[in-house]
Image (cartoon, rainbow, N blue to C red; front, side, top):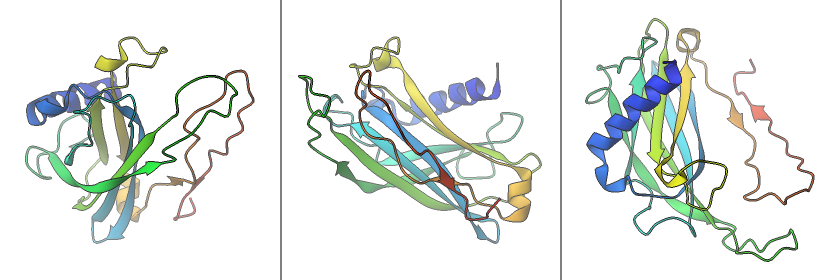
Length: 202
């Protein structure tokens, strides 16, 4: 079992134990996780998360707290951070992105609605051989997807690795400049600049 599958299984188990009321959600539309070194072994951890606000279930609101797991390079939860190796980052509110996106593809279909939220907190990350893998997992995708088998039972894992070298050098992760659009027209050309900025310049 590779590290990502192992992490996914552990985080899903953690979420099953902590937030069982949210497992019927059908809303995940994407997300990203980044970190910023603040000095003195402190890191600002940010999770931007997006949901489909039309095709999500009524109980598919954003989690009031994002449960973030910290793992070492042996795929073990790090028990020195938070309770049981995880922290809970509070919900910071949400906004709706382009609430009415009438199709530009000249086809008949419904509008698109995406909401986003940001979870952000400062956490102490002392040096550790091999660094950390930081992960968040959330069930489920919306039922309109046709390229995922059983999307309403399929979740997503968002993770970032903070290497031992990054800890030693007080390095921060790169951040994407922009998100792609909420929809893409079939049989049309897609041009998207997926560049990122690294404040450390490396």
